Image (cartoon, rainbow, N blue to C red):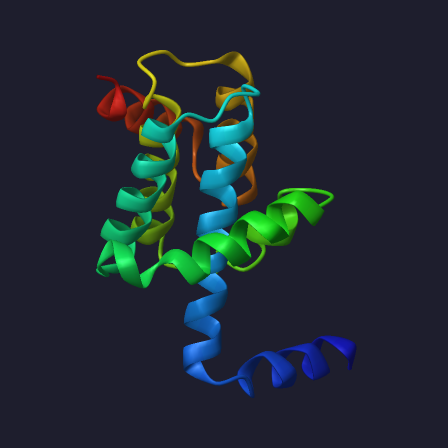
Length: 143
């Protein structure tokens, strides 16, 4: 009964709100990867904007609201599940696109920090992306 109530509540949300949830969740995950190594450069901020704009087919000036919301939620979050739970129902191709963007974010500064990789690994597991695809996407994103 509780599951039916949750489904009804989820189905009653407007499509625009569901899409915004996806955008904010991805912005939060990109921020999490960017900040995992304890550094945040201007180059990484620009890359975050570019990746988010490309993923959602928007101009960079249109995504600043999502970035602000995503970074605020990322700072308050207890776990990555808060973001991945909104994304795991997406088609596999879309989830892989998101994971690839996370890899690109991690490689922005030219080197992969183990903490960045750990965050991406956890996201992959929470999004039910097989380890073989995790590795393929990692190699695809390498500079």
